[in-house]
Image (cartoon, one colour):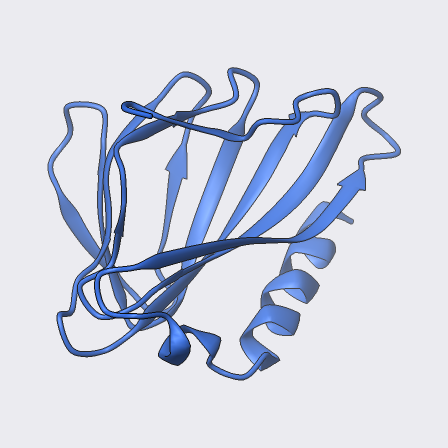
Length: 138
């Protein structure tokens, strides 16, 4: 059931017009697009976050809620990512990466200086967690 829900969410976001085109160069926009308690797992919720990068855009280095397990799938363009002390990698449309609880997301950026990019991050998180992301620097 969870796999079907995630596939439906990805297809719904993929069908949305390319909003990343109106995100300014060097900027990022983050939008929660769904938030649902998981009926079979009391105290846990599934949250979908659309991250849109304008050309050359990026998010600051950050951590997520301690309970967060995240899978992120690129749905437009290409995204550079580096988790913890691992290597920096470029993910393209249809490719995914995972963040485990407690991971440090050191690089999250558009891989292009001329084209926009988007990714869908799906969180499994404690329902009571209200702050999903904390930047390293305020």
